[in-house]
Length: 162
Image (cartoon, rainbow, N blue to C red; front, side, top):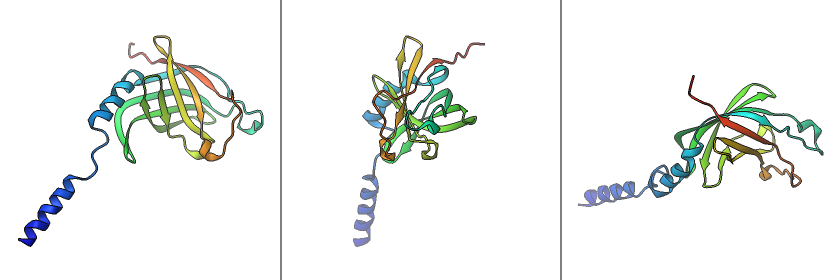
C-alpha cells in the first residue's frame, strides 16, 4: 500500500511540473504579434553609430540583414523565437539571436557582451513593406548614453521572387 501511495504521489508531482512556455494563451499571443515581422529583412540604409565621448566605439558596426524565424526556443521560463543578425563590419559575421513581437514593435535580443554595450534591436513598421530599426543599449553593462544617441536603419523584406 505504501509503495502504491509513493508511486501515485510521484506521478502527481511529475504531472504538476512546469508547463512548456511555448504553449498556451501567452504563446499564442506572442505568436500572433510576431508573425507579421517574421521573414528575411535586408538593411537598405543605416546610420553610423557615433559616441561623442567614446570615438573608439564610433562607426564600429554595419548591419547587413536581419532574419526573423518562427522556430521557438525556451529561454529560462520564457518562450522566444529564433533569428539571426548579419553584420558586414567590423567583420562579416552572423549572430544567433532571439526575438519576439509586440503590437507596436519587435525586440531582437542576443548580442554578445564582447561586441559592446548593446542589448539588441527594436524594429517597427515603416510604411507597408519596410521596418525601421534602432539599436538598444544595455544599461546593465554600466553604459550611460545621452538621450538621442542611437543608430537607426531601414530594412526591406527580402523578396522570394526570382
